[in-house]
Length: 295
DNA sequence: CACTTGACCTGTCCGC
DNA sequence: TGCGGACAGGTCAAGT
Image (cartoon, rainbow, N blue to C red):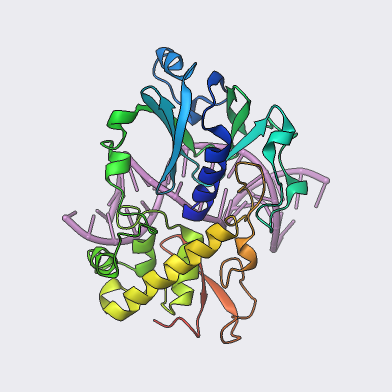
């Protein structure tokens, strides 16, 4: 479930909280969550200093000094929650406005979904992942950008250098596919997942099953405009919490309060009043207004 | 070659 | 109340 806005929110939190700290120890409760070929890898982690945090598509990169980086994919249910040794270090719990600090995971960790525990100099970073699809991996920072998982990604959906023309060209390379499938394809555009695909398609009045070649350039430009708008609003609201997502402080995001179709099946469309439907598009749950979004 | 489906997992919800 | 099955969604490998 963490898509671009959720991962971006986590990245901002982790950057504020973790940079400058040293890794003191690591504990793995589920080997696949942080696979390590040989225990030699531990020696590259222990004593390393966190120098920076990045987001690449839906992935997070924790850059270590001197030479390595931890790359993390949260998939659907992954969480990265930091608990400082001194709770007063955490600052204003209400900084996202819509968050629910009373539901915070702080004080309840580790729990049975905790897969990896990184003990740092000033606190503990928990990697929780109910469904075990997420992972952390260790790479040499120098070779990271050459790995297939990163070099195969398309430009980030919020990359300012992704012009309208370039967006349209990349989408058109998949001319025979359904537009929603293309939006979800990370090698075309990186960062979009199910929630923001549905939201941006509703906003641009495009049916998710429309074949790309049936769409005009104007419609695709409109789609990019609405996608950027939706992603920025979601970042402003601290992301979407459906079930599992929390930010680095353990707080929920409030975007779903503003969602127009996602998880609104049976409720009226805010544009025309028609009832929101739920269909399947290539196996993915898809929310649409059949009156606003016609094939 | 382009596209679709199944596997990876666990927890929750629904109907019988 | 218990049980089986569908569902949730990101990505890759395998299948069409």
